[in-house]
Image 1 (cartoon, rainbow, N blue to C red):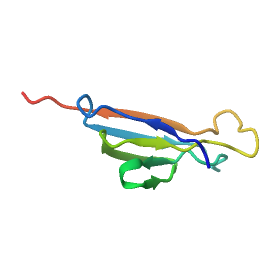
Image 2 (spheres, helix red, strand yellow; image 1 turned 45 degrees about the horizontal axis):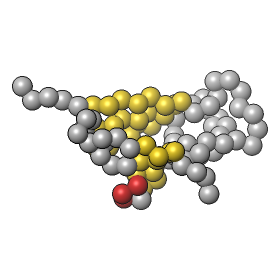
Image 3 (cartoon, one colour; image 1 turned 120 degrees about the horizontal axis):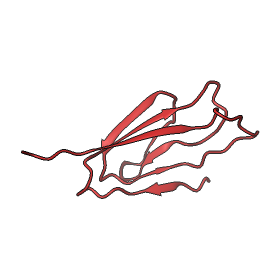
Image 4 (cartoon, rainbow, N blue to C red; image 1 turned 90 degrees about the vertical axis):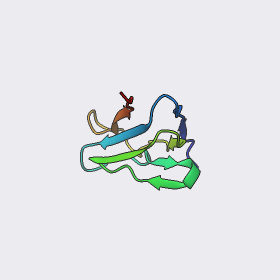
Length: 88
């Protein structure tokens, strides 16, 4: 079993987390999926996929691995956005 990287975000600082995954085809790695812990849901890492969820949900990322060396530019890339707003 892969050791996940656990990420916890404080719910009083950020309201929503947005993750976007990117990689060149063909996919040359395994793992890198995101698991939403409280609901035991795993979202597969697919290039150009976006996941938006409430930041108070604990989430973790599965270990990224490959059978062979991955050429530069063919790894897993992620863009993370945190969303919040203030009432005026």
